[in-house]
Length: 241
Picture 1 (cartoon, one colour):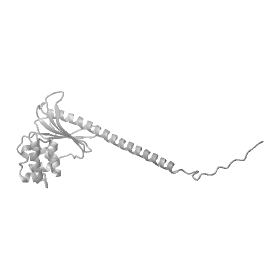
Picture 2: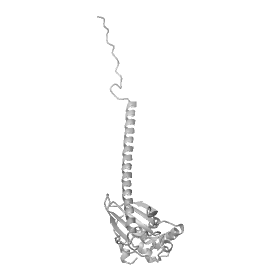
Picture 3: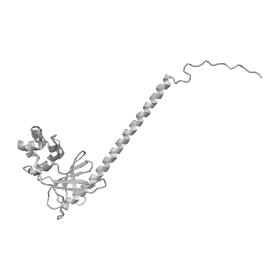
Picture 4: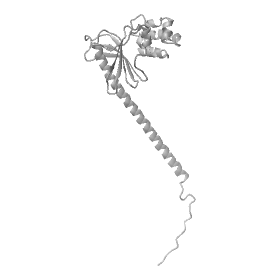
């Protein structure tokens, strides 16, 4: 049988090892995979956050509808605070008629002591801001943002309003609504704040319409987090703000 000797093949210097180009390709692929996974996780977190916010908004909106119904069934207009049961926990409702509040145009003329009590450290800067806001026709949410003092941020919107007709600061104790004679309260402007257990607040200014299908029209609406319930303005009530 004829045979031939096997030819020896010279060994390559990179035999059994990845070349520099292959290593770079693998590194690039791993970076791409890491980037895609990171983007996917970010999108997932964003989707979960958006879903949670949607659920909170839906829950608070339902509480707002219940609050309007309770308001129409309550007695004389007064500052109210009560609890509405919900699937995500009890929701606190604060309802305030806007008309008795100090008119925004008059707020800039408050005495120094009154401004200082509401906004210690900010009183000097808040006066010109109030005057400018009155001229520009600012919203209730704008009023709360004029100062950084905790008491001002928590209570200014309960005392001063662009829809106010009062001539002085006045704040009454908030009580649960009592069953009275039903009234559509057409034309009345109210602030309704629904607060979830985890600090989300749906804060609205509404005008009651007298329309059975749409009893309240939203004038302003702000959804914020980090709010607290209870009566943060109690010190002002005790002092006869």
